[in-house]
Image (cartoon, rainbow, N blue to C red; front, side, top):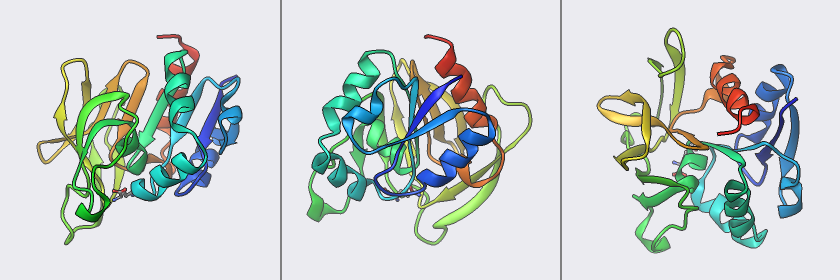
Length: 196
Ligand code: GLN
């Protein structure tokens, strides 16, 4: 059975937990470095990336999360979580300066890439590896504006990459935990049980 953590500092972590439990995974909420012990994978949820980054500093989680990846852990970031995984972040409010990120995904992510007038929308998306359109919920979503060579694009919306994978790191700009469609969670769990 897969043991999966959900970073539970802020944001939509309960919804991820519910999706994982529907699929029979054992789920742990992660707030401290020690909570990562024994996990196969970790989900970084959507929420507010600047707030989450601040809490990650407060809880001393930056290096433990990088170490978790280095020792073979699988990671999946959704929306704000995807921003935290990226190599470079654009579009942070200027008063915050350069936004910290984990740098585990060779992409430049653009925050709030789909404009203010359409803060939220749902669209049927073709996602590589899934049969049939996936109902993708975008909430002030980012897009992967630059995608490095080793990064596979799994889905695009209006010409912008919105789901990517690089080795053990999966990132989606949208919120699969809010739809009741658990296919992406299933894909993630399969990856967690099959060593890369
Ligand atoms: N716009 C938020 C950010 O930049 C992300 C929104 C979300 O996670 N739904 O952090």
